[in-house]
Image: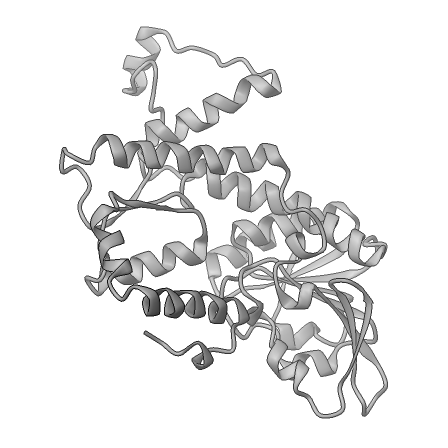
Length: 323
């Protein structure tokens, strides 16, 4: 297994250390565990990417259900959850007024869409950076500018990374930012922002304003930037994450996925591949949450159901439908 020192990601170092220490006690620990596992369900975009990589190289050891791409996860937790928790974290950490500020959202997937919507609603002038022309066009249709980070790095007041990728905001970007620009990440690990480059920059001075809110001062200009949650997920580091209701949608997906794997363990329905939760179960997750919000669903008549070729009780959309 990889040496924990082989990565500069603090969280991954801890994971590797735990695995290494466990293997010292029992070298067969994970082989024995594998034989008892019926399947796994994965919540996050990053984790799902890893599962698909394992499927591609034939190293996936058991069936996996991709919960992240359930509609009732990605379109709710990722979008509406971030729309709520990004400004919550920003205001708890900095008390800054968002209105009138120039905010850059790096990435316009579901997380980026939620963040951009929140910042726009709060009165910020929002600029998006994107690699995907479809996502870029979506941003433009929402009235947002789409530029590169290099175009706006010296002008913006707030920077948010939402990409799930690495090396998005680098040291050279941060050195060019205006004094007291706010830099934060709501995408995944702290490697979206070049924290290692910042921490090891010669003469850099770190001033902790309060826990999880640090001002980093560059020696050559005596100006600084404010980094939230040490580059980790700011909605968790500076606030309390997503509200319980939207997380209930995600965790209900997890429970239903686990039940599906368990109930079908003897049927051979699920091979050593990655699956998306079936549409009728995705709809079930949504249906379970409607009553709390006082919703009442319209029911199809038999003739209406026949006309559009769907069952009266659903599922109502084909697997390829884009919500």
